[in-house]
Image (tube, rainbow, N blue to C red):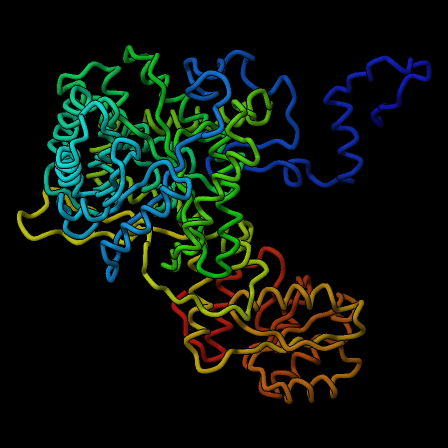
Length: 640
């Protein structure tokens, strides 16, 4: 029966419209779908197996008061009550010192960022990690005004010594010192693949440092629970949350064991999570992180301590090709993190993936936050997503999924145990295989890389200057052998598989081409010819186009003149039935190394293959596989 959505004929002008029910809506949707499955067309399943519906109503979310209010446990709606002032969140810029960069250049970059609106900086390793080096890198920086947050990985304790010595040298009182030491022995082991000390010993040292910091430096946090390590390696949102939570619990226990109260220990931990261009997932993930951590602290006796949350735009989402698209990715990630109540946000410069992090890149990264906070007034709004049935429901589902994974980690002995056993690395590798399948089939498109590539852009030329953080694992230093050795969690960039094809073409002597064997008039072949052109350009293969051919002899002559090693037949199914087999045979006879047909072959697959068609390209095809074989046939070897 059709849904009746007509208005009553006597409805007064000032009356409320009748409230439609879900069955009425479903009835209208069924008419539009015309028999197509509702779940397949309108329902999305996330990497964590969560079902995302096309419509959410007041019956879908959690109880109205489940998320509380901003500034009150469980802090889902933010750590502070009311809207934030115009300064908003902490605009935290990231700096490192790659090979060939001087300390004076690092110092100039830090000063530029702080003078340009950044409110704190993150410093990666500087080479010689001592007070003299740190002093030069931070020359002219007022250390009682600008928080310095270290990210020195395995050298975290060297960073603690250097920064505390620098505060003393600059006569910064302990009560006035600001910053973070960034001690995360578990995250450092995961990223670099080794730990000199057994992980329980390393955790105990981290806990002791945090307990001492809580007593001496009230404006400093010592510990970091870094989820971005695992997100870089391919973790799903729930997995990233679970690993970060398990790390936070390990650090919390170690600090309490060192003599701190639970509240003081919790206040020593910063959580760092990815902010991706998937806006609602990022919003839900950060809100879910607060909910889960609030539950940990509730059962630990410190429910009043909010999570301190640092969001960083996702390094794994950055592309080398068409890097300007990274500005859009960063803007969406920043917006999502800010609306989800992140306390600090780091935006990676748009050239980060290619090592081209210059002054312009840092300025645009910095200004992305400032424009959103001050010109868009985003900092003045408290939890703008609060009350959205979709966001609240997504937050709850993600919190439940992360909590189940967190419990499994705890049941297996905790984060240190599963990390040392290699279970984290194996789980991430399996997850990455699933992700690559989605990327390869372009179910997860990458703008500028697997969709809408710019064939004429120059190949990326890395300058390796001011790269925010080293993605590659660090070598074991001279001295004692590591107590823990595991496979390091690599940086797995989503665009890398397709970019490897473009790199192979750039390294070749000439750019390969594919001839579009368009059959019939423009209206007949344009749709599939456009699809084929876009597909092959993803690998850097230039398409040789035309207005179509009415006879096979003219087509073969044009193909021969083009000199292309590849050809793709494009037209309608009706024309294929009449001409495709003969054209394929003619193309092979004229020297085509590989012949494609755009579209599904249906029942004629065997006939077309016998005539010379090598592959059929259509929506959902494994583009990475198809294009790798195409390059091989064109004489461009690739390992993809």
